[in-house]
Image 1 (cartoon, rainbow, N blue to C red):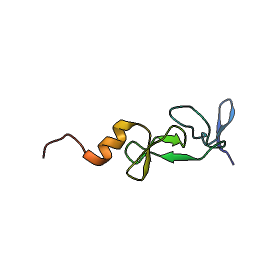
Image 2: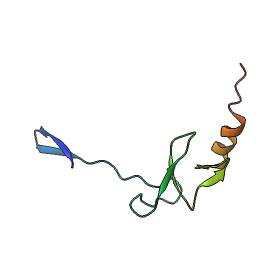
Image 3: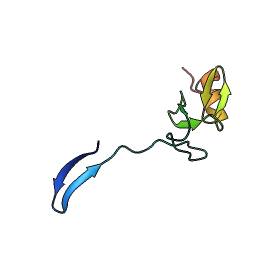
Image 4: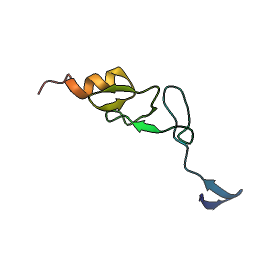
Length: 73
Protein backbone atom coordinates (compact mmCIF):
# COMPACT_ATOMS: atom_id res chain seq x y z
CA UNK A 1 0.00 0.00 0.00
CA UNK A 2 1.36 3.39 -0.93
CA UNK A 3 1.77 6.09 1.66
CA UNK A 4 1.05 9.67 0.93
CA UNK A 5 0.97 13.21 2.22
CA UNK A 6 -0.80 16.35 1.23
CA UNK A 7 0.85 19.02 -0.92
CA UNK A 8 -0.35 22.16 -2.67
CA UNK A 9 -1.24 20.09 -5.73
CA UNK A 10 -3.03 17.32 -3.84
CA UNK A 11 -1.90 14.04 -2.30
CA UNK A 12 1.58 12.79 -3.10
CA UNK A 13 1.76 9.01 -3.30
CA UNK A 14 4.92 7.03 -2.66
CA UNK A 15 5.27 3.47 -3.79
CA UNK A 16 8.25 1.24 -3.13
CA UNK A 17 10.41 0.89 -6.22
CA UNK A 18 10.70 -2.51 -7.83
CA UNK A 19 14.09 -4.13 -7.51
CA UNK A 20 15.85 -5.09 -10.73
CA UNK A 21 19.06 -6.76 -11.83
CA UNK A 22 21.90 -4.25 -12.27
CA UNK A 23 23.11 -6.05 -15.41
CA UNK A 24 20.02 -7.02 -17.43
CA UNK A 25 17.33 -4.91 -15.68
CA UNK A 26 14.94 -7.84 -15.18
CA UNK A 27 12.42 -7.22 -12.38
CA UNK A 28 12.28 -9.07 -9.08
CA UNK A 29 8.68 -9.91 -9.98
CA UNK A 30 9.93 -12.03 -12.90
CA UNK A 31 12.98 -13.78 -11.41
CA UNK A 32 14.69 -14.31 -8.07
CA UNK A 33 17.31 -11.68 -7.29
CA UNK A 34 20.34 -11.96 -5.00
CA UNK A 35 21.99 -9.10 -3.14
CA UNK A 36 25.75 -8.78 -3.68
CA UNK A 37 27.42 -9.12 -0.23
CA UNK A 38 30.03 -6.46 -1.11
CA UNK A 39 28.17 -3.57 -2.78
CA UNK A 40 24.56 -4.64 -1.99
CA UNK A 41 23.37 -4.35 -5.61
CA UNK A 42 20.72 -6.78 -6.84
CA UNK A 43 21.62 -9.38 -9.48
CA UNK A 44 19.64 -12.22 -11.11
CA UNK A 45 20.67 -15.89 -11.38
CA UNK A 46 21.73 -15.52 -15.02
CA UNK A 47 23.97 -12.49 -14.48
CA UNK A 48 25.40 -13.43 -11.06
CA UNK A 49 29.06 -14.31 -10.70
CA UNK A 50 29.11 -17.42 -8.51
CA UNK A 51 32.16 -17.66 -6.30
CA UNK A 52 32.92 -18.86 -2.77
CA UNK A 53 29.35 -20.13 -2.42
CA UNK A 54 27.81 -16.70 -2.97
CA UNK A 55 26.33 -14.63 -5.80
CA UNK A 56 28.17 -11.41 -6.72
CA UNK A 57 27.25 -8.69 -9.22
CA UNK A 58 30.77 -8.50 -10.73
CA UNK A 59 34.07 -10.36 -10.66
CA UNK A 60 35.56 -7.33 -8.89
CA UNK A 61 33.20 -7.84 -5.92
CA UNK A 62 33.96 -11.58 -5.81
CA UNK A 63 37.70 -10.87 -5.75
CA UNK A 64 37.29 -8.22 -3.05
CA UNK A 65 35.31 -10.68 -0.93
CA UNK A 66 38.22 -13.15 -0.97
CA UNK A 67 41.24 -10.83 -1.10
CA UNK A 68 39.82 -7.90 0.89
CA UNK A 69 40.68 -4.22 0.50
CA UNK A 70 44.05 -3.05 -0.80
CA UNK A 71 44.40 -0.68 2.16
CA UNK A 72 47.45 -1.14 4.37
CA UNK A 73 46.90 -1.16 8.10
